[in-house]
Image (cartoon, rainbow, N blue to C red; front, side, top):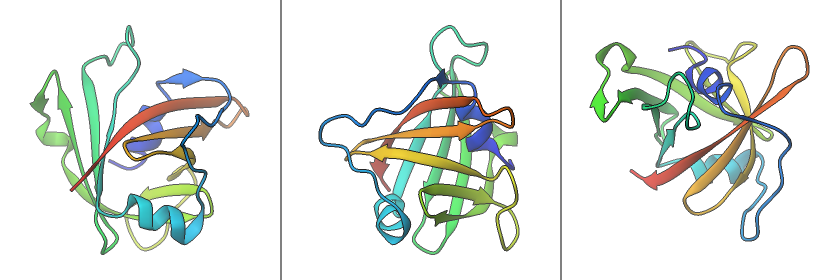
Length: 137
């Protein structure tokens, strides 16, 4: 499950982040507080080879991240895992073990009451951006 959020986000839109009206750019404790107790659902864009796949991350207040997935509305058993999560600056990190490693974090560009934009900076410097929905646990 390592890098699942980062990997799926990399399947999405490429481009730069613009902040929509009503969205907040948060960092550190403010971002962690906003994500805590939320379920994030990340989908690839239409016409993607992985269309129909949904990555689900539940960010618990105790630092646990319950990870799961769905394909065409059905749970994916091999995609169920519990990891840890934390915020570092403007980055959301989901990881195994005690500390995040390279590739475990993705930038949170902006967040609203029910949406979040994530951007992965690829090794070649390219930006890959995706949108996810948020709902309270």
